[in-house]
Image (spheres, rainbow, N blue to C red):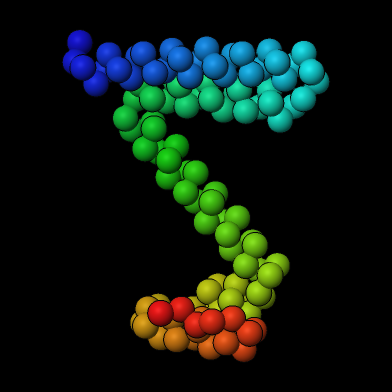
Length: 113
């Protein structure tokens, strides 16, 4: 067994053990957040053993993070969210930065760059 695979197995076992302890604690305290966190840690412990699975999970987490950022932007600065959703593929990134800087300036913020 390779060094990396052995290390992955070791960490996987530790994560699963930690996750199980959190699930028990959460169930005992009737705290769903702690219990769910334990479930997530167990999931990651299992995913660690398969490179494709851990990469796919990482991509899903990135997409979820991007979604949450856009939702926050939409609630805080509706013009930016509206602009990003309507952005045409013909507009350059430089043009996009200029437009975002204008929106930031209009909202009393310091432009980027």
